[in-house]
Image (cartoon, rainbow, N blue to C red; front, side):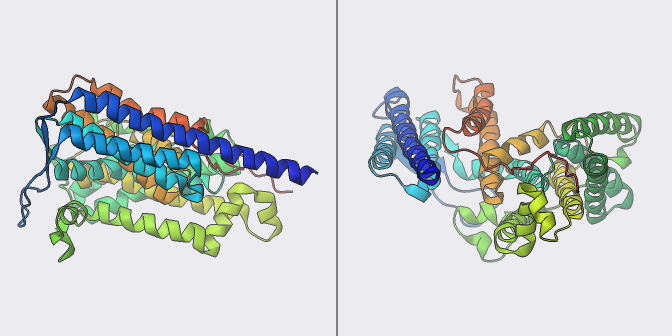
Length: 421
């Protein structure tokens, strides 16, 4: 009887989600048609640039009729929504959601650039660059929280790594040594967080907050006292772009994906490695078991304490890598509080991506796109404050947390200290 009731409830929840998602798809179609398409005129054209400066193979811009293209996007969204309401995409619902959100983003870009030109290739390059620290911060959070340790100290780890990598890189005149030092600094701060939260069982939020405050104060002091007054201590340079032969010559996507620096290539590699490791290996199974049910894992012979230490230290290395990007992968110098809350945004991307490496990357791209568009909107003379655009991913995250598009699968033992019996 109880099993039948549970099955019935799950079926009702599935049907409810099907209807809600279908309604969301229809709402997006309505927005594209009645808000965006009706605000353009039939003679307006939108020009999307597909080439980048310095690239040998230059492509002509893609020109579309703004109104007609928006109507097509609205119809496609409505068709997806209608199918979702009628039959549902079942396990492909999230993929359908990503597709419709893509239609909405493309529609917004078409509307924003109606009668003007937008370099789409340049926007993609900027989006990918801005997504790097957010995605790496999200991966750091996944490593920690999948093992049951809440880590809001990612911001502090990133900030410390940004400062250390710039300072050590300048002194040693080696970008690689600076990168290693930055990652090591992130691991050291992660070790402090691990000892406080795992060994002494201090509230993990408090521990992370203390580390963030310490990092902000310490890096600001070192920067003001030494790095701003002695320019030779704050001039490490940055990793150059390294085109991958053949792949970098692919039209549009080649220059965007395969003409980058080491940080972006490593980010792609880590996403693939972690996705496989978490769901296809014994190591990943043990990590997830420790985060879901540590007592059961302990019963099976898994060392819960050691596993959590390893996870937090790996998360610290990941956060250190993300922090080094700000100095060695971007601007080539350190400025106070230059991470700008990207560690916290990484945590939001982790939640948005449902504690999944690939999902976190998709969320990182969404946040990076919002950041890139906020900088480009003034150039298109769009009467939308950039702050509203930056709010959009956070609103989407709150929708995710509210369970409107499916409840997030937060590890059951996340943030709970383990008491060995």
